[in-house]
Amino acid sequence: MTTISVLTAVHEGARPFLPAAYASLIAQELPPGWSWEWCIQEDGPHVSAKDVLPNDPGIHIGSSRKGGPAVTRTMAFARSTGSLIKVLDADDELTAGALARDIAVLSTDTSVGWTTSRVVDLMPDGSLLGFEGDPAPGVLPQGAVLSHWSAHRRPQVHPATLCARRDLVTLLGGWMALPASEDTGLLTALSVLAKGYFIPETGLRYRKHEAQSTAHPDHSSGEEWEARMHLIKERAEALTGFVKGEFMNSPK
Image 1 (cartoon, rainbow, N blue to C red):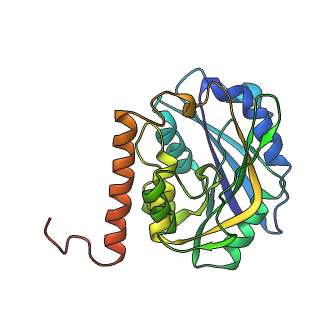
Image 2: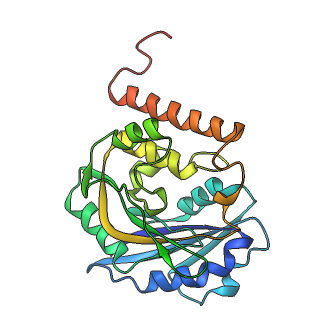
Protein backbone atom coordinates (compact mmCIF):
# COMPACT_ATOMS: atom_id res chain seq x y z
CA MET A 1 0.00 0.00 0.00
CA THR A 2 1.33 3.42 -0.99
CA THR A 3 0.58 6.38 1.28
CA ILE A 4 -0.24 9.99 0.62
CA SER A 5 0.37 12.06 3.77
CA VAL A 6 -2.08 14.89 4.39
CA LEU A 7 -0.49 17.53 6.64
CA THR A 8 -2.51 19.90 8.80
CA ALA A 9 -1.20 22.54 11.19
CA VAL A 10 -3.83 23.66 13.69
CA HIS A 11 -4.05 26.38 16.34
CA GLU A 12 -6.85 26.97 18.84
CA GLY A 13 -8.77 29.33 16.58
CA ALA A 14 -8.94 26.80 13.74
CA ARG A 15 -9.84 23.73 15.83
CA PRO A 16 -13.63 24.12 15.32
CA PHE A 17 -13.13 23.66 11.57
CA LEU A 18 -11.33 20.30 11.84
CA PRO A 19 -14.49 18.17 11.62
CA ALA A 20 -15.34 19.70 8.25
CA ALA A 21 -11.78 19.08 7.02
CA TYR A 22 -12.06 15.48 8.22
CA ALA A 23 -15.40 15.00 6.46
CA SER A 24 -13.81 16.16 3.20
CA LEU A 25 -10.90 13.77 3.71
CA ILE A 26 -12.89 10.60 4.42
CA ALA A 27 -15.02 11.33 1.36
CA GLN A 28 -11.95 10.94 -0.89
CA GLU A 29 -11.84 7.87 -3.15
CA LEU A 30 -8.26 6.81 -3.81
CA PRO A 31 -6.89 4.63 -6.61
CA PRO A 32 -6.32 0.94 -5.81
CA GLY A 33 -3.18 0.40 -3.72
CA TRP A 34 -3.27 3.86 -2.13
CA SER A 35 -4.20 5.02 1.36
CA TRP A 36 -4.03 8.31 3.24
CA GLU A 37 -2.71 9.28 6.64
CA TRP A 38 -3.70 12.55 8.29
CA CYS A 39 -0.84 14.07 10.24
CA ILE A 40 -2.24 16.84 12.43
CA GLN A 41 0.22 19.01 14.32
CA GLU A 42 -0.99 21.21 17.16
CA ASP A 43 0.68 24.61 17.37
CA GLY A 44 1.30 24.87 21.10
CA PRO A 45 -0.61 23.57 24.13
CA HIS A 46 -4.38 23.60 24.72
CA VAL A 47 -5.36 22.90 21.10
CA SER A 48 -6.83 19.44 21.87
CA ALA A 49 -7.62 18.41 18.31
CA LYS A 50 -8.64 14.94 19.51
CA ASP A 51 -11.64 16.45 21.30
CA VAL A 52 -13.35 17.32 18.01
CA LEU A 53 -12.31 14.29 15.93
CA PRO A 54 -13.29 10.61 15.98
CA ASN A 55 -10.99 7.75 16.92
CA ASP A 56 -9.74 7.01 13.41
CA PRO A 57 -6.52 4.97 12.99
CA GLY A 58 -5.62 7.11 9.99
CA ILE A 59 -5.39 10.24 12.15
CA HIS A 60 -2.03 10.92 13.81
CA ILE A 61 -2.00 13.92 16.17
CA GLY A 62 1.19 15.47 17.47
CA SER A 63 1.93 18.58 19.49
CA SER A 64 4.89 20.91 19.67
CA ARG A 65 5.77 24.25 21.23
CA LYS A 66 4.04 27.21 19.61
CA GLY A 67 5.97 28.21 16.52
CA GLY A 68 3.52 29.35 13.85
CA PRO A 69 2.34 27.61 10.69
CA ALA A 70 5.76 27.01 9.10
CA VAL A 71 7.23 25.23 12.12
CA THR A 72 4.03 23.35 12.86
CA ARG A 73 3.54 22.09 9.31
CA THR A 74 7.18 21.04 9.08
CA MET A 75 6.80 19.10 12.33
CA ALA A 76 3.78 17.32 10.83
CA PHE A 77 5.96 16.49 7.82
CA ALA A 78 8.63 15.07 10.14
CA ARG A 79 6.10 12.57 11.51
CA SER A 80 4.67 11.59 8.14
CA THR A 81 5.53 8.51 6.10
CA GLY A 82 3.97 9.06 2.68
CA SER A 83 5.76 9.28 -0.64
CA LEU A 84 3.45 12.15 -1.57
CA ILE A 85 2.82 15.15 0.69
CA LYS A 86 -0.51 16.97 0.53
CA VAL A 87 -1.31 20.22 2.31
CA LEU A 88 -4.69 20.68 3.99
CA ASP A 89 -5.11 23.70 6.25
CA ALA A 90 -7.27 23.06 9.30
CA ASP A 91 -9.97 25.46 8.14
CA ASP A 92 -10.13 24.28 4.51
CA GLU A 93 -11.95 21.44 2.76
CA LEU A 94 -10.91 19.11 -0.05
CA THR A 95 -13.29 18.68 -2.95
CA ALA A 96 -14.39 15.28 -4.23
CA GLY A 97 -11.59 13.55 -6.13
CA ALA A 98 -8.85 16.00 -5.14
CA LEU A 99 -6.39 13.40 -3.83
CA ALA A 100 -7.07 10.98 -6.70
CA ARG A 101 -6.28 13.69 -9.24
CA ASP A 102 -3.00 14.55 -7.50
CA ILE A 103 -2.02 10.89 -7.35
CA ALA A 104 -2.93 10.32 -11.00
CA VAL A 105 -0.68 13.12 -12.23
CA LEU A 106 2.31 12.27 -10.05
CA SER A 107 2.01 8.53 -10.74
CA THR A 108 1.79 9.00 -14.51
CA ASP A 109 4.60 11.49 -15.14
CA THR A 110 7.69 11.03 -13.00
CA SER A 111 9.21 14.26 -14.34
CA VAL A 112 6.51 16.29 -12.57
CA GLY A 113 7.48 17.09 -8.99
CA TRP A 114 4.34 18.75 -7.65
CA THR A 115 0.75 19.67 -8.40
CA THR A 116 -1.67 22.46 -7.58
CA SER A 117 -5.30 22.92 -8.52
CA ARG A 118 -8.07 25.45 -8.87
CA VAL A 119 -9.41 26.85 -5.60
CA VAL A 120 -12.61 28.60 -4.54
CA ASP A 121 -13.15 30.76 -1.47
CA LEU A 122 -15.65 29.41 1.04
CA MET A 123 -17.30 32.54 2.39
CA PRO A 124 -18.78 32.90 5.92
CA ASP A 125 -22.30 32.66 4.50
CA GLY A 126 -21.48 29.35 2.79
CA SER A 127 -21.27 30.76 -0.71
CA LEU A 128 -18.36 29.94 -3.02
CA LEU A 129 -16.32 32.58 -4.81
CA GLY A 130 -14.12 31.63 -7.75
CA PHE A 131 -11.22 33.44 -9.41
CA GLU A 132 -10.04 34.33 -12.88
CA GLY A 133 -6.46 34.12 -14.06
CA ASP A 134 -5.61 30.44 -13.54
CA PRO A 135 -2.86 29.13 -15.81
CA ALA A 136 -3.67 26.75 -18.62
CA PRO A 137 -4.22 23.16 -17.44
CA GLY A 138 -1.24 20.87 -17.57
CA VAL A 139 2.50 21.11 -17.08
CA LEU A 140 4.03 24.23 -15.54
CA PRO A 141 7.67 24.51 -16.73
CA GLN A 142 10.49 24.82 -14.23
CA GLY A 143 10.75 28.38 -13.00
CA ALA A 144 7.34 29.47 -14.31
CA VAL A 145 5.91 30.09 -10.85
CA LEU A 146 8.98 32.11 -9.85
CA SER A 147 8.76 34.22 -13.02
CA HIS A 148 5.10 34.98 -12.38
CA TRP A 149 5.72 35.71 -8.70
CA SER A 150 8.63 38.04 -9.49
CA ALA A 151 6.44 40.03 -11.86
CA HIS A 152 3.27 40.17 -9.79
CA ARG A 153 4.30 39.49 -6.15
CA ARG A 154 1.65 36.77 -5.88
CA PRO A 155 1.77 33.06 -6.76
CA GLN A 156 0.62 31.89 -10.16
CA VAL A 157 -1.21 29.03 -8.42
CA HIS A 158 -2.54 28.59 -4.88
CA PRO A 159 -0.02 27.06 -2.42
CA ALA A 160 -2.83 25.75 -0.18
CA THR A 161 -3.58 23.13 -2.87
CA LEU A 162 0.00 21.83 -3.07
CA CYS A 163 0.83 18.14 -3.39
CA ALA A 164 4.54 17.30 -3.80
CA ARG A 165 6.94 14.41 -3.88
CA ARG A 166 8.43 13.72 -0.48
CA ASP A 167 12.07 13.88 -1.56
CA LEU A 168 11.65 17.40 -2.95
CA VAL A 169 10.05 18.69 0.25
CA THR A 170 12.83 17.02 2.24
CA LEU A 171 15.50 18.56 0.03
CA LEU A 172 14.10 22.03 0.77
CA GLY A 173 13.82 21.38 4.51
CA GLY A 174 10.03 21.75 4.61
CA TRP A 175 8.41 25.14 4.90
CA MET A 176 10.34 28.39 5.14
CA ALA A 177 10.87 29.69 8.68
CA LEU A 178 8.68 32.75 8.18
CA PRO A 179 5.69 34.06 10.16
CA ALA A 180 3.61 33.91 6.96
CA SER A 181 4.02 33.18 3.23
CA GLU A 182 5.95 30.04 4.18
CA ASP A 183 3.84 28.05 1.72
CA THR A 184 4.54 30.52 -1.07
CA GLY A 185 8.24 30.18 -0.28
CA LEU A 186 8.10 26.40 -0.57
CA LEU A 187 6.03 26.48 -3.76
CA THR A 188 8.33 29.00 -5.43
CA ALA A 189 11.40 26.94 -4.56
CA LEU A 190 9.76 23.72 -5.75
CA SER A 191 9.02 25.38 -9.08
CA VAL A 192 12.73 26.01 -9.57
CA LEU A 193 13.68 22.40 -8.85
CA ALA A 194 11.00 20.57 -10.83
CA LYS A 195 8.16 20.94 -13.28
CA GLY A 196 4.70 21.29 -11.80
CA TYR A 197 1.21 20.53 -13.00
CA PHE A 198 -1.95 22.62 -12.73
CA ILE A 199 -5.17 20.63 -12.33
CA PRO A 200 -8.11 22.69 -13.64
CA GLU A 201 -10.77 21.00 -11.50
CA THR A 202 -11.45 22.72 -8.18
CA GLY A 203 -9.43 20.90 -5.52
CA LEU A 204 -10.01 23.03 -2.43
CA ARG A 205 -12.57 25.15 -0.67
CA TYR A 206 -10.51 27.87 1.03
CA ARG A 207 -12.42 29.10 4.05
CA LYS A 208 -12.50 32.85 4.73
CA HIS A 209 -12.92 33.85 8.39
CA GLU A 210 -11.70 36.46 10.84
CA ALA A 211 -9.34 34.15 12.75
CA GLN A 212 -7.25 33.09 9.75
CA SER A 213 -3.62 34.19 9.62
CA THR A 214 -4.05 35.93 6.27
CA ALA A 215 -6.37 38.43 7.99
CA HIS A 216 -3.43 39.83 10.00
CA PRO A 217 -2.58 43.44 9.00
CA ASP A 218 1.09 42.53 8.38
CA HIS A 219 0.21 39.74 5.97
CA SER A 220 0.14 41.73 2.74
CA SER A 221 1.98 44.99 3.38
CA GLY A 222 4.55 46.69 5.57
CA GLU A 223 8.11 46.03 6.69
CA GLU A 224 7.55 42.37 7.59
CA TRP A 225 5.90 41.67 4.25
CA GLU A 226 8.76 43.29 2.35
CA ALA A 227 11.30 41.18 4.26
CA ARG A 228 9.36 37.97 3.55
CA MET A 229 9.06 38.76 -0.13
CA HIS A 230 12.75 39.62 -0.40
CA LEU A 231 13.86 36.33 1.18
CA ILE A 232 11.46 34.21 -0.88
CA LYS A 233 12.83 35.75 -4.06
CA GLU A 234 16.47 35.60 -2.98
CA ARG A 235 16.27 31.90 -2.09
CA ALA A 236 14.47 30.98 -5.29
CA GLU A 237 16.99 32.91 -7.39
CA ALA A 238 19.89 31.23 -5.56
CA LEU A 239 18.32 27.84 -6.29
CA THR A 240 17.94 28.86 -9.92
CA GLY A 241 21.64 29.63 -10.09
CA PHE A 242 22.48 26.32 -8.47
CA VAL A 243 20.32 24.37 -10.92
CA LYS A 244 21.96 26.17 -13.86
CA GLY A 245 25.44 25.55 -12.46
CA GLU A 246 26.04 29.25 -11.92
CA PHE A 247 25.83 29.33 -8.12
CA MET A 248 28.96 30.84 -6.52
CA ASN A 249 30.73 31.02 -9.89
CA SER A 250 30.66 34.79 -10.18
CA PRO A 251 31.85 37.24 -7.54
CA LYS A 252 29.28 39.76 -6.33
